[in-house]
Every structure is written in C-alpha cells, then in structure tokens.
Amino acid sequence: MSIPSSVASCGGLTLFNNNRGVLNTLTTNELTQLQRDAEAYATAVSTIRNDRNARSLDPTSVVPERLNDQELAAQITQIQRLITDLENDIQGETRYATDLRAGIEQRLVQLQQQEADLVQKQQLIKTRDRMLQIAMEKNIYKRKLIYVLISVILVIIVFMMLGYVAYRRGFKVNNFGNKGLSNLSV
Figure (tube, rainbow, N blue to C red):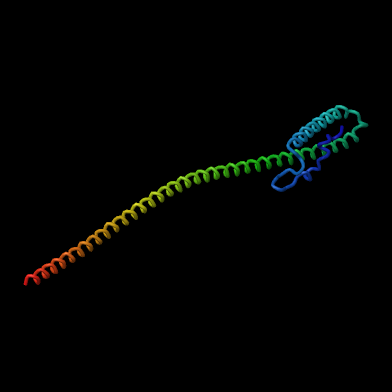
C-alpha cells in the first residue's frame, strides 16, 4: 500500500505561510482532495491492520508486522496532524473571510451614509442658492426703489428752485414795471 500522491507531496507545516492564516500553495479543492485521500489512506491502513491481526496467529510473522505497524502508526499520526493543521488553517481562513466581509459591509454602510449626506447637502445648497437669488432680487428691487425716490426728491427740488426763480423774477418784473410806470406819470 502506498501513500496517496497528494498526501506524499505535502510536507506538513511547510505548506503554509503563517501570514494571517493564508494558505500558500493549496487551494480549497486541493485541501478537500487531500483530506479525502488522507481518510482513504487511514481506512486502508485500518483494513491492513485488521488483516494482519487476523494473520498474526503465525509466530514467524510477528516481528515484521510490528515494524510495519509502527511505520503505519507513525504515518497515521503524521496524516492526522496534517488534517488537524489543515482544518485549523481552514477555520483561520473562514474567520479572516468573515472579518473581511464584516469590514466590507461596514464600509458599504458608511458609503450609503455618505451618499445620503451628499444628497442632503446638495438639497441644502440648492435651497441656499435659491434664497441668495431671492435676496439679490429683493436688493435689486430696493435699489430701484431708492433710485426712484431719489429721482422724485431731485425733481421736487428742481421744481421748487424753478418756482422760486419764477416767483423772484415775477416779483422783480412787477416792481420794475410799477416803478417804470410811476416815473412816466410824474
């Protein structure tokens, strides 16, 4: 009985990189294939052991069987350690993937919140822009009203000056006219 090729090619812990539990050379499919091969090998070893126990009644075969049993036990122990290591690494990868998924979900929630804040700020900017436009229109209206009032006041002042000038000229004309006529009659 030979060791399956996937089990024989594995060197135990040399397969793995201890950097956050990331497997260095084995994919998930390779890990499951390795686990199946290891279980098949363990089953084959158990079958061989049972067959040998049945044949152990022969006293001449006792010493070679013990050596083979020791080799088989060492190989089974090595395979069991390898399976345990693989299971631990798979659990580490699962935890890492779960943590990564939680981080991504948290970032997604943050992005959704930022998007909602952005929409709210855009609405606020539109509202403030409209308020500024209305304030500018009011200022333009008030400026026009002030210009009209100043114009009316200036027109009133000009008319008052014209009236004053006309009144003064009319008074002087009458004074000269009366004097001129009174001088002629004397």
